[in-house]
Image (tube, rainbow, N blue to C red; front, side, top):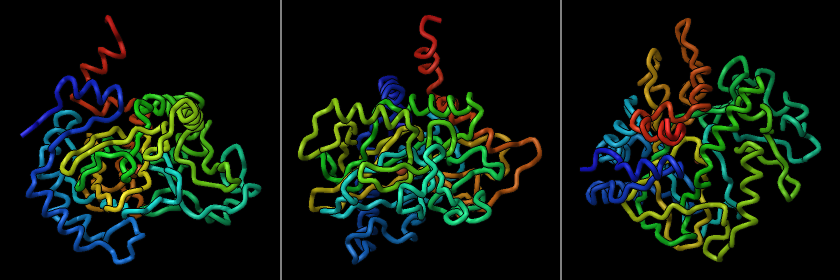
Length: 360
Ligand SMILES: [Fe+2]
């Protein structure tokens, strides 16, 4: 069984922000997970999510825990708490996801927002009447769908982890079948955006410099904004320079082409999106969100965090504030990691130092 990435694969991860692992899952494990999901597919075929109880089923979580993926992550990233849950993400055949992919970095909040552009403060992207939408105490606002703020002091407005690991349960070799799409290589730009927010002394994440929380789309409608402005600008240029095709009308995005049993490992900072499924079969992916263990964190491994599915593991999955000892600042540590994402990848250190400090 594969236990680590090759040098070439590590270079791919470094350059592209993701790497594909072929045949990561045994056919038995694949069959049993697929069978479970088919049994539980909702009758309303337009729903994207199958029932939550599947997300903690041994045969589903085992796709990570009992395959080569856990060993590979231990070696390329480092130790991590037990993975107890995951995201079961099904895009039914013919589901167009509302038309346009919503490219984002994981960890943001998306909730009820104003319908009209004139209700938004254009600089911060907050509703002008914030209390109406976020309540009096917006630092506690949010649940498992994302938190408005990670810390009570409102210095960090984005959740984070280390690696997103996706497992394909069906063949997705032809673009346009609901593939995960990524902004290839954009992870370093995302890190730069977090650094520039920190250097400017602002909030890290939305409402911080260069990252309005809500933006106005070309159709004039407000939307929750999962990308810093600098990334959105670069994405527009990539889209304008590329050639859309019928199968893949989003040239800025790279489709992750997998066959059943393949997996993809991406950095948290790699912007991504599900894409419309023009085919007739459901696209079935299982996602694991893995955060490298942090020394001194007394909450590593608590079930309240729901490690494996949560994109905001500094808080409980449902938004609970966790207890931390004096002298341990989980939020500052997360900011430090967002601004230096490779520091959480033990097995990448040699390549990172070679590439970042050539000739030294
Ligand atoms: Fe995502």
